[in-house]
Image (tube, rainbow, N blue to C red; front, side):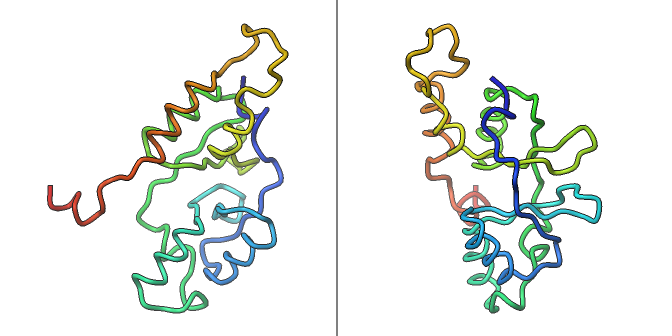
Amino acid sequence: MNINQVMVSEVASCTAQTSLQDIAMLMWNNDCGAIPLVDGEEHPVGIITDRDIAMGAAMQHKPLWELRGEDISRDRELFCCRPDDSIQKALQLMEEHEVRRLPVVNQYNQLCGMVSLGDIVSFTGAGKAKKAADKQISPMETMEFLRHISAHHPSHKAAAAL
């Protein structure tokens, strides 16, 4: 089973110069928890989550309208997948980099969708009447990835002290 079968293809996005206040409103209006940042050619250059907004404002002691997406995403690597990647490949990428969402890019590296762990979990075990051989990913496999990605990780301060 491939990402194109579970991804969301209508994705709200914005530029890296968009204020966190406007990004938060995009999330609210589009009922999502992450907004990809794109350049002028629709290439993803970052991603902002609802948690990023809260932590960014708190740590920088500034109101949301004074912060830009790039202020939060500047030093973070972005991980993407392709529509024809397997769900297992996307889950491995999420697990390896401890992320819950991946922008999906087409052959031109342009944003064409988003896939979240929630999208995959919602799809896991769907169509239980199907033959077991038809399932490409088991609920057990998904739960293992979910358990790892959702586990508490050492804080940045604790990790820096190690």
